[in-house]
Length: 208
Ligand SMILES: N[C@@H](CCC(=O)N[C@@H](CS)C(=O)NCC(=O)O)C(=O)O
Image (cartoon, rainbow, N blue to C red; front, side, top):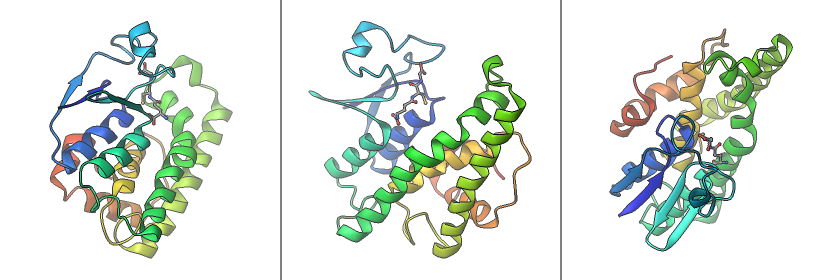
């Protein structure tokens, strides 16, 4: 059985659990790693992930970190062609959005989330908050354009790994209290995701 290390309040952990659910893979989870639980700076955790971050996947003797690499691995190893197509161009399109989520979208909302949701005193600078909101809105405008083009899911008509990782980022968008621009295609996309059984397990009841 696959083992996932990390608290479920982490969207990076939820990516992995959502992918396992889509692939119908049974998992066990060690809940008590990450903020508020056991620290990932513990030597036994650092031996698994030197970045001291969750999630970590353990598949027998194989240990893997980086959530987007983990979801790719799961799809590759466990018959997930439906989520991660093999044809080069289709796969590249999914990869493009997986990488964009990790390198552009996710970093764009860090300050705003820590400020407004976590209410972390270190993230209460008004200028930095405004700039963070602008960065996040700019990234979401790119997603809006793409969803207007596909009229379906992020990389095209079919639900893919990209929708797991971006769906969770969109969940943060709707769960963060600030004046968000109206993004009709993103709203419709989120409603489309909510038609999936697995959505409520990992995104809860938050709606636009
Ligand atoms: N790029 C990493 C980022 C992982 C990450 O930022 N994990 C956060 C939780 S979302 C973490 O480990 N925080 C430290 C903690 O909870 O103690 C990935 O995608 O796996």
